[in-house]
Length: 76
Image (tube, rainbow, N blue to C red; front, side, top):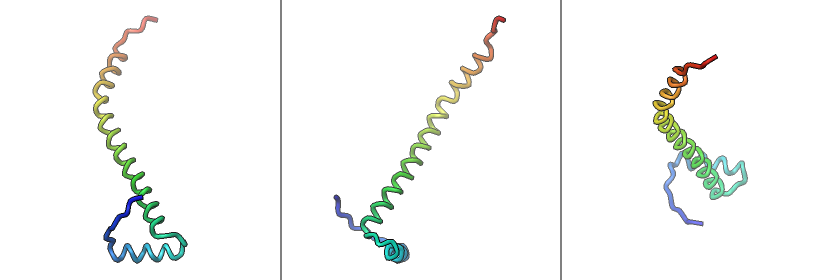
């Protein structure tokens, strides 16, 4: 484990302490879980951004392929 020193806004610290007193959970565990949760949220946002970019990249070629399929003369 790594030791970390950080500065927290007084209002956030007070709210956290209030919640922790009701949860009977250590501050360290609470902060670790909060960071883990936030990391998952940020990873999803990064993945969403990456998928949007990749979707735009393949969009043009997908439209070309669809147009080619529409122009195929199917013999019946």
